[in-house]
Image: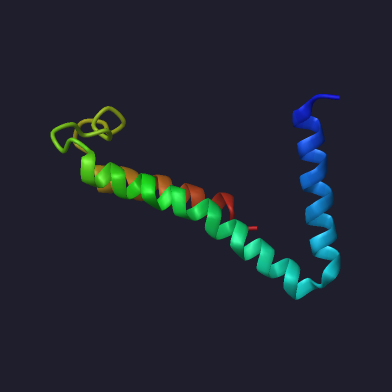
Amino acid sequence: MTIVFIIALGVIILLAALNNIGSSFGGTIQNIATIGKLVPLILIIIFGFVKGRSEVSPFTPMVGTGISTSTALCNVLIATLFAYDG
């Protein structure tokens, strides 16, 4: 067995044991893990806004002629919302 497999197995067993303590404690662990995942994403977004170059528009190639960027993004958002409609 490799060391990665042993560490992964240990983490799974630890999380299962913490979840067996109680549902509220397991929920607290889940909230901490979610915050741990969201903080780096928020930092990446902030870093992109602060250090990004504003002269380059990443949306220019995806929008056709005569269509505004907001119209194209709204159409994509509507299609995405219908995909998760249930």
